[in-house]
Image (cartoon, rainbow, N blue to C red; front, side):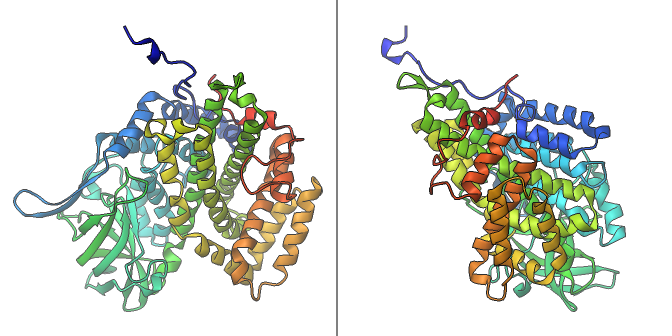
Length: 545
């Protein structure tokens, strides 16, 4: 018989066994808004199936196992032969296989594909975020490869396949492949034009041998990689397969795996090339231009991934508060906690709404939408990924000491939160990219202003924010030092415009009052007490039914 002092009371049941998609009102509304009626029912069904899997005890256990058992590098076999293989826990393969089967690398060739994939990526990332890296790079490799029709014909059907096959074999012997990317080097980091990896042409058309290194190469067990190297004609993009067509291993020496803050389930490696066979993608000297669409697409996934982390953190905080009793009542009913939860919910809803709007722009693929994406993607990438850490940290605190222990899952979310702000260009890179677009591409600014202007007149605080923004945009000659401030303002105006058009009045009012109107403190939980915060919180609660 258990000692009476060990009787467990007032502990919160786990948030499990629910549909992560259907239980998210903001996400389901976004999918309904952006998908055509002809594909909506099918998309709902597939996303709900994925949502039930993501919310299941099994998937949650896979996520924990994959992070508790990080990948291990084997450079040599027992006989001393170089093998350069990375061993993953079976849970990693289950997560990755489930994601590929659900179509999370397949967006480019089906109607509403980007919205469907973004919604699925947001849902499934809540089960575990690390394996999203190879999913994202595989999806994003398609537009880069399309610069070479022959390469696209060979690889695109494998990249968009719904079949996951682990193990290193020639691509011709597989029905589905994954891709990675190698851009940065020790001496340059973000400054890829300072790369020193050399590419020497061979007699075969488009064939080269590479010699050099890559400082960050994630998912090194992928089947192929897009990398940058210096060819005779300048910095160029190349496809490096792990296994050559004849079955021989390509030269791909993994020096070590990174010991990272978070993202523990995913392997990130330092890689050496020494006579590594590669195929040219695009033209010599146009490597950045060739790979830039891949970069832009992965930046969108940084936004979606951060929205997913925020959503899961906020869902956990609200769930905890709905069951935990304190000072004579439920925590969720306490006015100050309700203010904190509502504040977090606003940030989460704004992130999800913006992420799905960007995905819909990819599906539309018009000249105007492409111009909008040029400026909206780095703007969103800058702001949403930066808000992620603050949101997750505050949500963890809502659980008190229970949130600080590993079993809650919140520490894993917190460790993961900074990654998307760093990956594919950190904050300064994004801010400078927006500034460059503002100065050189007037059609991008025009598309952005047209988008935010769709809600003009709906709220006086948005109107005032747009007016102030236009004043700032009028003088960009010396704007670099203030680029972060400018891009932050652009992101908030864009989010405010979207929420005014699509969110309930209570949500839009609270966002505009705080983020645009300035009636807000410097920490979460400082919203005006006169707002309808209970409605905002209830909207963000994960629906179990």
